[in-house]
Amino acid sequence: MGLPLQENNIMLRAFSTAATGMTAQQMMVDVIANNLANVNTTGFKRSQINFQDLLYVEMTEAGTEVAAGVTSPSGLEIGSGVRAASTIKVFSAGEFQNTGRKLDIAIRGEGFFQVTLPNGDLRYTRDGALQINADGQLVTTTGYFMEPAISVPVDALSIDIGKDGGVNITDSAGTQSVVGTLQLARFPNPSGLSSEGDNLLAETGASGTPTTGTPGESGFGTIQSGFLEKSNVQMVTELINLITAQRAYEINSRAIKAGDDMLRTANQIAT
Image (tube, rainbow, N blue to C red; front, side, top):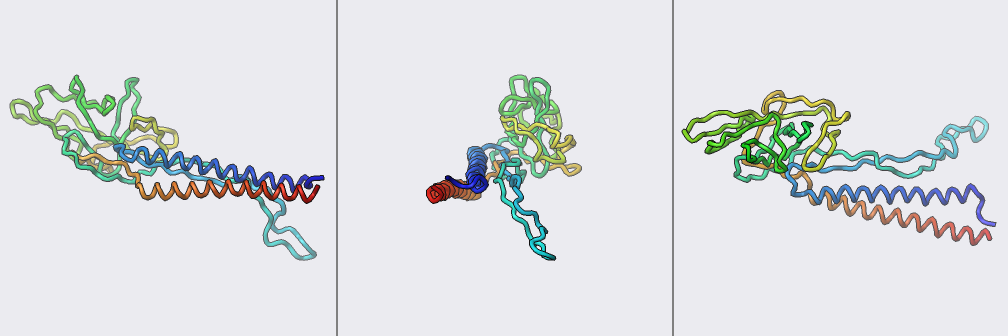
């Protein structure tokens, strides 16, 4: 005979609901794995994943009259599971590492360095490990030009980047001069920036339009020369989240097994 159709569907719903839980925890593990993989990436900002519950099947509406003059204080709803809603970057400050290298800079406060791609597009980063290319221009580790472009003369004996972003050099004659000033960019919603790889972030409709300015002014952070900002990934926190996700995955798989056992038993009774 088998189970009545409605009861059978309810049991099968438990399978799909638990499956959404397993998928969600798998995605959480993926995010945690990426955080842990970048624990030593300069300027990296950890991501966190947000979840939302799915639609509910309303079996009985709240406030339904159950007897003359008597209404139910609550309804009967059965959820359909969970889904991953978004991942957002957490822009808390990372630890500053003293490198002693003049071209290593970190932003103490808000803001992003601006980088120009070969096609002219702008990207943004917190990675301040700068270098000088063969043409004497300041570039990122990948070789992308800083924006605004700054060129260091070949006769420069020393270079120093001030808190205001000014690039100061001393030439062979002992003369000191400023060859350019680094500008920073700020966004209304930095969590809306798109990750592009190479430690670069891109503007999106969610991030808003950037505002540029001089370091140390109008709410922009200052430049710390001789330091690099390390990743803000906290190993202990990520490992705890990893264990939590693993246990949640196991429990959801047990829910599927329990549903299967109950369905088998019910079918055996009904036949």
